[in-house]
Length: 305
Image (cartoon, rainbow, N blue to C red):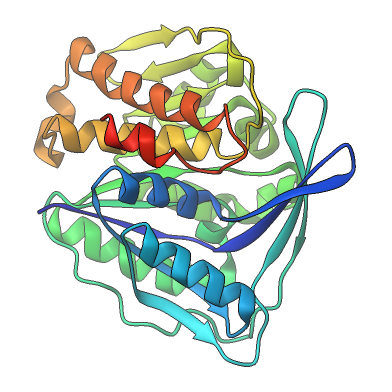
């Protein structure tokens, strides 16, 4: 059975609405998508780290309850697990404050086995953190060598915009590793100062990775490949929270690859109709997560797939 292997941070998200705490849920950009894929029945492994505290225990148990292997999760006995405060605004978009307590030596773990046509997901600041670069490259080199599909979600927040130039060599190297790059107009604005999807693809991404998806919230999304240029509208939706919307678009797209039995050797030959099905899967996961305060699809939605 093909596996989905993700690398990223775990965090406890505490959501505030009207400046009052509303709910606390395990989260993390890659983590959110993997939970949804685990609920959808995919074989999922996560490479991550938690503190040896009560929050870490909550996160580990949550992973196990949702079908995610924790064999590659490092527990730091003397450290506290990361926490984020997510403040929902009038549009139900979140503004974050993060609290982290990582040791200097991180992610001292053996990489899981990766086989041909597995799907490796990575992204966010975790994928460009200097202290983790050797471990990230170890996984990506392994994936590329065996012919796994590599999916990169840039997820580049405004808090790191002032570091974009310094981090650019690592970002471009990630583009080169990737078989599919996905980001939002906001991400690319923070990263390049450019929000036009065609300019980002033509001048920044396309040279390194030929398959590019740019999402723009309720305004829709763009798909660009060597042979396909297509824009997809998004139907209006009354959102409860947009936290996890992009993460779950990633999960739905990966689920679409699995469901339609698309392997790495198929990527160059995908037709517009093939991409329509894959993108529709991503959009359905994203819509589902926007109508609740959870960061992932519901078990009821997963059972309907």
